Length: 369
Image 1 (cartoon, one colour):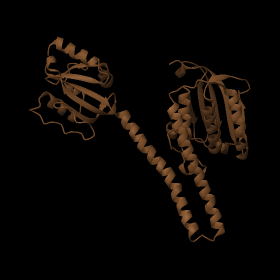
Image 2 (image 1 turned 135 degrees about the horizontal axis):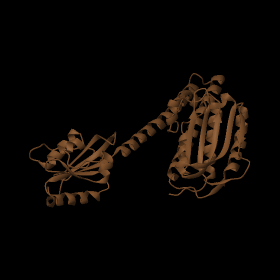
Image 3 (image 1 turned 90 degrees about the vertical axis):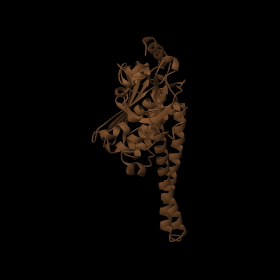
Image 4 (image 1 turned 60 degrees about the vertical axis):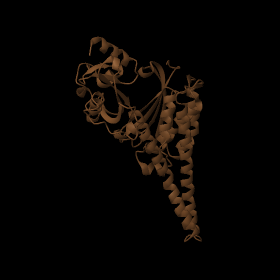
């Protein structure tokens, strides 16, 4: 292929937003757009294609497109649309950018005016695959969380209609359990609706302004009776003066109530809940000043292996204990999405036997896009 033809092919690929390469009749790479270089690395030109993308099915598709009479056609993928004649579309897990990428790869012949060759377009489907897996996991988790108490309640109802029909003690005990399980299911449904609302609003920044110190004082006042009942002393610091930050008051109340409740439930063994409001002169990720709220307990702490997953939906460090205390496994997921909407950060520091600190960092002013 001539240099002029290669330049035309390169110009053609540069306008394509997905990773795309072109090979000549010898299956050597003659062009690659910036997206392909970002995925496969630099120095892709004048190399055998097999050294760029080492996947047998992709190499076979390139060979077939270049010389259809000398090579068998790739088997059609039932999950992909049937391509036009002379074009191959396959799905493969390839290694690129140091990771495994699930991709739909389309191999098509170059226009005749550009000479003998083929283009290879790589559409990364990893994000879609991960989203679909998350959806499946979410449905499975919700089904499990609802089915377990429903099954128990059905069993109690059958018992109350049968052997325990006239047993007052059994009836009272079963009704207490049914009330508790119904309450947990109601909380689960409420938090699922809350999570859905928060996620739908996550890309819309709050436009209102609020007094963060006043908001925290209100949450502390609300949670004080709960803390006292659990034998936990609350110590608040840095909330005496008024300060205003951009934010949704209702959502931030939800954030801090959740964190305070968790500290009392799971860190209450230490008998202490510390809340500290402090200014951060410069927060690198926000490129400016911020306000941090530390929520600290002196309880059992959390093993470091659990910390990266604490904000996942339905993830629990101790499943039995969480359910026994009425937890749904959604609280920290909601907290994470609310903080994301505020362009803030959630940091978690904890060690077994040394308690935990959850830090909410909010920008002092509306950050620039």
